[in-house]
Image (cartoon, rainbow, N blue to C red; front, side, top):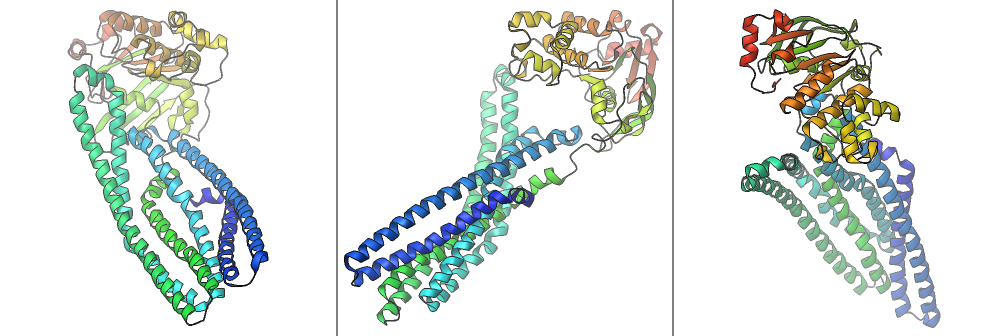
Length: 568
């Protein structure tokens, strides 16, 4: 994390220099107070008052310039540090392997970007320079106190020792409480995301009160952990304040004793009372800031795990570029999840270029897992997947994703224009966008919305029907000239007529290699496929034209026609 401080050393240096000048100004105010007392008890007369006024004005002007410079550089430094960190964090997340990403709830990433980065700003980027600044203030004030009276300076340092020791006493427990609080914030963010995502379901099932009760339990836990964390910090802060007040009392009494014995003047007394604040206060602030830094350590660890971990998909940023990914060949392909569940068992098959394949079978038979393997989502499998004669593991992720597209049952749409939702922010001409939209059957949608390709899609496609959303996913594949289209129950949630139109659109697309996971068993539809794969318990039970399938497979298809999507 220090690299973000070091990356902006020039701004940091100017900020710290301004803070150091501010510390020097503190001693100037102390000398001013001493001069006030000496003038009041001396015989300077009107000339002495004029000198005081001039000195005071100079101090005010210099203080104004130093304060502005310090705050400006601080703001600029924090902006650059936060910008660098936020960009780097998002880069790491967006390039994360899809399976590693899905191991966590989306709410945990939202919490990291919102809560964790805010705490890094407040308790790391701001705290580290402020600790240095307070050390400077302490040293300058201590030197001035030594000039006033060495014994007073020594006493002041001794009285500061309890404040220095307090963070060591409370730091470890405060850090643990901070971690518990951050973990509960993760849960809270995930819950809020789920509630708002499923808002329609909440309303349609009338479960507002149950959701409120569930939300209250989670938010109560968050605030309870927050209270425990702040209570732990309060103990340290209270003891630190008590130590500060005790130091002030003892310092003042001893200074009065020295005045009564004639060892120091009233001017020095006022000067030391003024400057002692800038010995005590920095020590107290350093103590509090260091405690804050200790509590932020779990957050630093979470951020570092993302920045320094292995989230990025191994082998996906490297690899060869290929022009073709067909035919797709499976050779003794087996796959098991980390918990040991074996999903696929030694599959051998060849998907030829331009042909249309229906993949059918009962839920849990491995149909969707097979599509994910072909998309390159999983790197840990046995056997081989060949794409256009090359091992899939040798091909770069970008090259693979440009030539293979996947359409899910639920299509994600950005709150953006039709153009950007088709191109996915790629650079394409208007002619190419119109062609993809026409081929995907979106012309009626574009005409209806009125502003052509610049018509705006509402969040999550609220102003589109389910079939229209699916057509956007297909248009994305068409504009990229994808050689292979994987349909994972893409039309399962659509009405019969709309689903039939989309199925026909894809089956009639020349040159497109189509692999469609489906639960549909209509004879007329299945007869249009070049080949049907029947998967059962992770094995290819049978494959061929519909009319070539055994009666056993046809009965199995009919039995599984329940409209359910594959879990795997």
